[in-house]
Every structure is written in C-alpha cells, then in structure tokens.
Length: 320
Ligand SMILES: Nc1ncnc2c1ncn2[C@@H]1O[C@H](COP(=O)(O)OP(=O)(O)OP(=O)(O)O)[C@@H](O)[C@H]1O
Image (cartoon, rainbow, N blue to C red; front, side):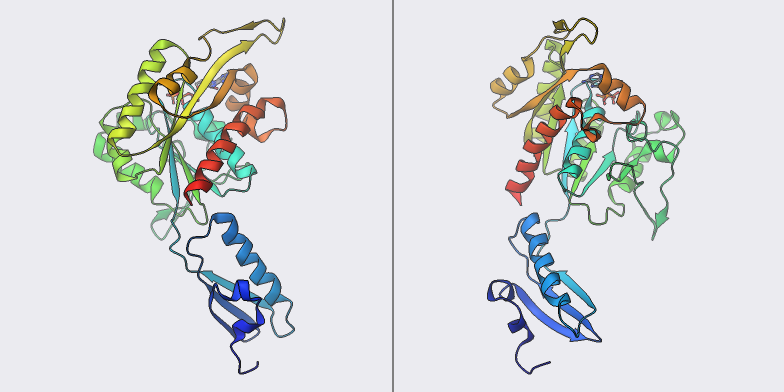
C-alpha cells in the first residue's frame, strides 16, 4: 500500500464521503459519512465503494460502515376509527407492495386483541424465537417479517389481558430484532381509546394512514381517528377508501354498497391528502383468508395497493 492517503484510490466524489479507509489482512474497511443522504443514495454509495475496492488484487472482502445518524426505523401506523374496515388487509398489502419496490419493511400487528396478520401473511402457527432477550420477527413468503400476538398466544387468548400485560407484549413486538428494516408498518387496533393513544405516544410513528369505508358512520369515526393522531402529534399521511364500489364477478354490474367517493370528500374537508381507493373485491377477501395477499400477485387486483404504496413510498423518501 502506498504511503499516500488510501482514500485517493477512490474517485473524489466518493472519497469526500469516506472518513477512513484501511486495508488489513486482504480486507478493506471503509467508514463512510452518509449524513443527509436518502436511503437509495446511501445504498448506491455503499455499493459503489464495494464495487471499486473488491476489484483490487489485495482485497478479498470489503466492509463498509455507514456512520450517518441513521434516522432509524420509520414507523408508520395504519389506523381506523372502527373495526372491520380493512385496516389489516391494507397494512399487509402495503407492506408487500413497498417491499416489492425495494424497501426493507417489517410489520407489527399491534391489534393485540384481534391479530389477523399471521393468517393474511400465511405464517400462522409459526413461533418467533428470542435472541438476547428480544424477539426475532417471523419471516413470511413475501419478504416482510412480522410480529403479531397471533404468533405468541393461542387464538383468542389475549382477549382477557389487562392493560399493563398488553402494553408489555406490545413493547416486545416493537423492541425486537428488526435488523435492516427501514420501515415498520403498524396495524393498530381499531378505535380511538386510551390504548391507542398510549401506544402512539410510546412508539411514536413518523406518520399515519387512516383507512375507512365510504359510509357516513365510518367517516365520522375516521375523522375521530384523525383527531387521535393529532393529539399524539403524529402527522396524517393520508386517507384510504376501502370497499369502494363493487363490480359483480357474474354480471359485471357496478354497485356501491357503501357509497363511493366519501373518503376523498372527507379528506378534502379535513385538508388531508387522499391516497387512493380499493374496490370491494371477493378476490381480496379470499386471498387474505388463505394467506395469499393480492399485492403479491401480478394480477389487476394488486394495482390499487401498488398505487397507494407508491404514494406512501414518495412520502417516506421526502422525509429522509
Ligand atoms: N377491499 C376488500 N374487498 C373484499 N374484502 C375485503 C376488502 N378489504 C377487507 N376485506 C375483508 O373484510 C374483512 C375485514 O378486513 P380486515 O380484517 O382487514 O379489517 P380490520 O379493519 O383490520 O378489522 P379488525 O378491526 O377486526 O382488525 C376481512 O375478511 C377482509 O378479508
């Protein structure tokens, strides 16, 4: 190795980001200051350094340490004012769609009294292992690791839990080995009670998505959910309309069992972004029930989830 600064081996644009570069036992070790870089710039820079250094005859292995104050996990809560509006379905499918776009996504099923993610993600019955007293999330076939009370207790068992026990369990789900996940989507319990508020304060998300069906009653509850996020100081990223419009698979006739467009109008009134609508589609329910979420497919049924994930992805990029 020459006596000049080894950083000179790198192009100037890259070298200015490298705080130190050393070579030891055929190993190159680069410490890189990635402050202010977005996720894709970070990984591009890291890859460029690897590519250049591994080409050298005296290097078999390249280690790159990115030292930027990594903002850590971006936690995004998916909430709803009332149950049964499709919050869990949306959370799972958004996680999959984001993962297909290259984001490293984990999923916390915080709906501890009615966990449904193990069924939707097709890993029901699997148990997370603990390592260093922290849980290791359960892998799914879709590249999205998940932790859910459904993985820890028999179905229905958590229902009888009192507040502190539930809070303790939730803490374990959040403070787990999330590894290189950059985004954690959280399937919140439905409603706007103390449990939700406490949770939002303890594991404060960077933003929240509110899902609602277009009926008036659901919309009133969705507005209440918006207030809850406000109270907790969590910005609302936008609203999603689920079960919006139904195309009969037999006759093709289009109907609107819950109305249509109500959520977009409500978003306008509340001055919140509207992220998109998902139709009422039998294939969505059937896919979710058999652990085959629609966003993982290349069929048209994936499209609405992918479109909403694109908007969420842009929001995530804009803040990093
Ligand atoms: N767009 C849709 N088309 C058809 N079925 C749907 C759609 N969205 C959700 N469902 C179905 O509706 C039911 C409720 O959805 P989901 O469990 O996602 O709602 P939730 O808001 O999370 O409910 P809970 O409050 O009970 O957790 C599920 O059977 C799901 O498969």
